[in-house]
Length: 203
Image (cartoon, rainbow, N blue to C red; front, side, top):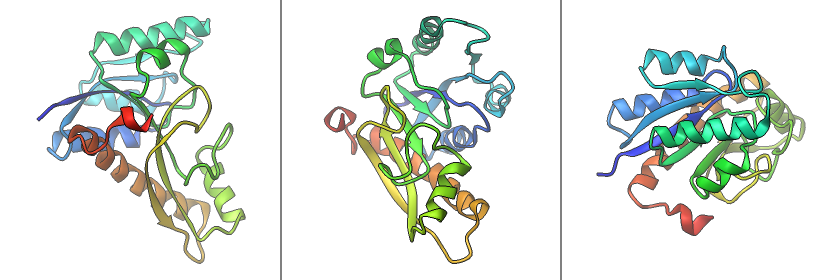
């Protein structure tokens, strides 16, 4: 079985990162997280990487003031650790052209709604779930898609539905969606390892 080498980019809590790491350790996912990169030096994602002895990097305007240099630093870290697939797990920035070109059709992002609904710039975290509730949707969900240079854009790789139930608050809905998001990441990545999903035909 091929062991997929993953590079995970995250800006904050890193709960999806942890779900992926746990699945790898438990044998539910034939992959390994080779490197973690964050644009937030105090992110929990970097702390999780440290606890798991995963190489990690802080790359932001603080470390590299020019966007081109940030792009290059991220690319160098991914290449240094022989990353096969880039995972955007709550990463709040667009990737630059160097990374996008080198990893074309190999960059996956997740979004806590059924794209193309409730996506785009400034639609993240609680704001997404607030919008779903305001629109009185009966169902929401999670989307994993190939990432490009536009927020929440690119061919859809996998989606799953999550019901919106009577009495839902932003917190209860967000919790339900996040739990399903963690599962979808593992399911989708294992499907890629097993060649049940071919990213080149999707992208």
